[in-house]
Image 1 (cartoon, rainbow, N blue to C red):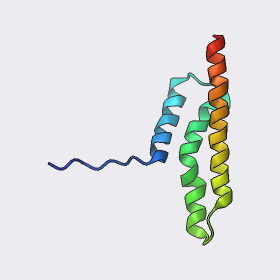
Image 2 (image 1 turned 180 degrees about the vertical axis):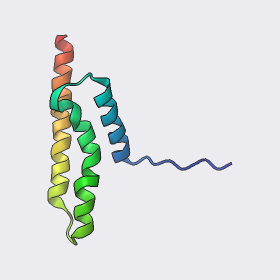
Image 3 (image 1 turned 90 degrees about the vertical axis):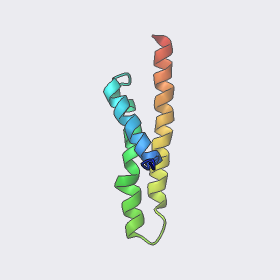
Image 4 (image 1 turned 30 degrees about the horizontal axis):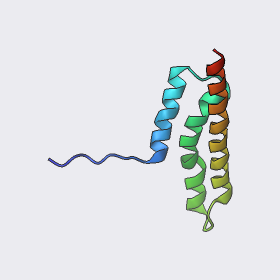
Length: 85
């Protein structure tokens, strides 16, 4: 019996992590939306711009980089709050 192929796409995993962060309630405010935003951003911005333009969507790629930087800020803030508690 052949195993069923699974998708290990990073965006899919990030969407699942984002849903888990939202459901867990451990993070508050805008921090809890960042992982989900990272997962859905390519589907909402990068892929449509890449499909409609012959040039690479550099501004869309840069926007995704900003979201990754915001994830770093969110992780830092949440870890600081966890240490204080």
